[in-house]
Image (cartoon, rainbow, N blue to C red; front, top):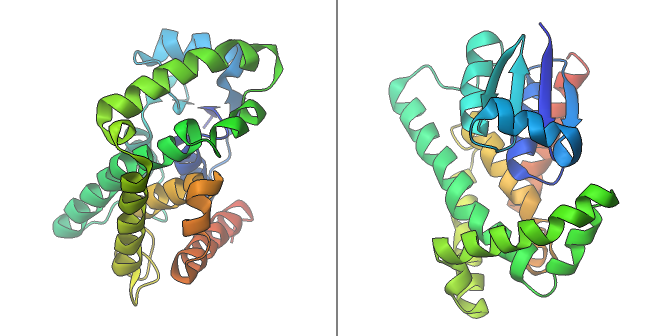
Length: 230
């Protein structure tokens, strides 16, 4: 099966899909969308978003939709729980990570004075320099439209701390969110925590929490084992 992932390295949603592919031991080709891949994503994806994936000619966008399709095609190491109640909880936690945590991460990366200067490292080359101002306007509008960007910095920090407390509470006594094995929601949470571990403003809070650091280490080991075929 030929699999091509249309990918942008810094995106937490792209990381989510890469981690699932690695965990399942699926071989794939990556195409950076800061180039010709952008046109392909817009032409075939319909929504102009990454990640997007081509699986033997079938094109699919959105990280959660991709995850469900990968679990259907590659059922070994399932990430969608078979139990309906656990699957429902997994869906809720997946949405929470992809929405609530994401916008806090976006603020610290795109609007916080410590994080914003780092963006030039992610948008390299002629295409990156060209599209960075466009992305800034778009992302600032999204963060403000969602509401996080309209709050004062002190309130956003309170939101961050509350969410990290929630993560620690959910992980209390468990290896993963739903128990002993990882589910889709774990890949979503991992990706957002990694994203928040980069800008200084959020990294200071994320990286000093032992339970979260240990959890991210477990998730990283899963990817490495999957890539190595173990």
